Image (cartoon, rainbow, N blue to C red; front, top):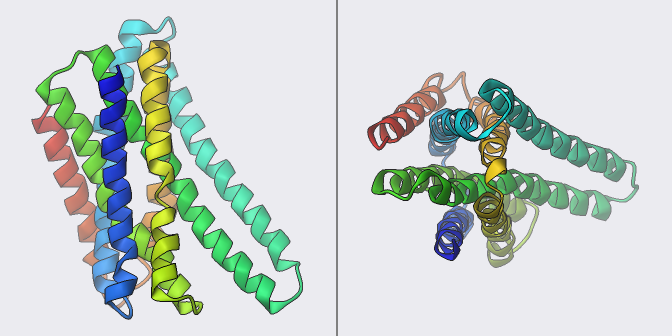
Length: 267
């Protein structure tokens, strides 16, 4: 048990490190290459969509068929919808706070509120990602530890880690534009990923000690990831579609295909 929680912690520390690498782009580059950023965001979207099904929803359905008294399709649907609703509620909270901030007079407050909302939005996105990794490693106990299942959990961590790179840059670069020093922009950018190790450990503990929650937790993480990919990452990577119509789209296709290949190949 403790080893699985430790693995989840190490994996999510790795995804945080990738966030820090993304944030570090503000130190080495004056501004990120938009073409490369769109490609990375598209790739991350494809990885997350594929992982949501093969690494989360499919195992959730299989485990619900074995352990749940309710129909497996009902368990997976409920968990998926709650995951999406969680992220929707988080987004509504951010929007409400932003409207409150906009009603505040004074330019310094507007600048501070902009920065707070930027960091908060990325941080909220990292919570379900950490949970997804923690759930994947915690599930190894209930599903039987094997090389294939371990590799499946690692694949999820790698996929999430890859999409954390542009997220780190998405925080630090705008902060630099707001006049923050490169060092401070980097520190705030990497800090947005620190919730992943925390939520990763929580996810692993929940699954290890409460087996009945596993199908719900897996599908919950899938719903959260799908909403983030479709609502945030895909629209963001398509912003420059006229100049480069297929860069981001091919990133999505390649990311999805690679994640599908790894998940199916590793069982």
